[in-house]
Length: 465
Ligand SMILES: *Cc1c(COP(=O)(O)O)cnc(C)c1O
Image (tube, rainbow, N blue to C red; front, side, top):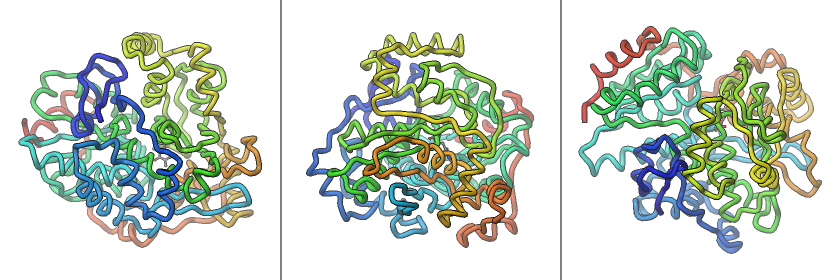
């Protein structure tokens, strides 16, 4: 399997190359050159398989020759062996039609673990064959940072530098990052906002003199291997609810469009998906794109679901690539103009095609709190603010009664316990696997939001290539 850039001019890479590179050199994102197809028999044969074995079947065509099947199986068993639930991503039934797919049983309590635990092992495996040493630099509003640090701590040949906005992540999120004392983990609290941190990371990747000294890589969801790992749980859940005989709908709390794009990929591979519901909070660029074809950047408003407080959804470019018939040259010019004007109008054909599989909903803060309260009172389930947005959108969707609707539960409620307590009156307990978080020593460096200071700090500690 080869991977091509959405902007048409970067060289095609195999799975190993695309995994290590993250972003394509022409500024685009890597996509499989074609979607692998699973027949009805292939899908039916997934019934009863463990999560790790389902992952091997679903990922094998994407991995191609980069790993043997036995190696892939070994990595999947190690990655998913670290989850605290035997089903890895269990389904919980809420009522006759609605289900939660719990994706938060990994080490850091958010769904990002599902992909990053595997990505950490892939990095290590691909680097053992080579002389390179990877320098991972990322910015986080909380969940990606802790999941990436857990996945990469102590691994050979990888250093990770994670920037978070000082004082603007929750205490649980900060401690999940800063109490990891492995020597290859470097936490930096930036004096500024998440956008400032993200801008610094982009500037470092774009600074040829700095970037040229290291082999830089990215762990956010622009990395194709992350999305590939997320396709697995769409198959796993749908098969348990009757696929391939029965179609299933998914409601996905969305920020960077990574998780829901994995659902789109599953549908392209032959999984019978009735609908993908894009659930946004009041930062609703994707909802506006879905209903009116208006993908224009608005003002960012912080909410109790911070992992969805995003204005530009990087992975939307991957969907546009397919909608524009994979014309990379044309998409490169569309994206260049979007980067200038901060606005993009979908043409009628692309807009109509998107509407064939996707719908969307914008859930405001009151509806989010109401969904948390109703889930607790009527269904006996304490859910986090992100999941609440997905569930509220699922409940509002007008789907036939015989279609199961699965809401992706993306974070453990204890990770956002202040917001959950405000909405429901219950303060969720941290599960035993993260207890002790408040007693452990923290280590991080506070730096001003200035490129020079951050580059100097990293250059002193990273391994040159
Ligand atoms: C990252 C995250 C999301 C959004 O996922 P995307 O792939 O960015 O759309 C939703 N909920 C939680 C808890 C997250 O950590």
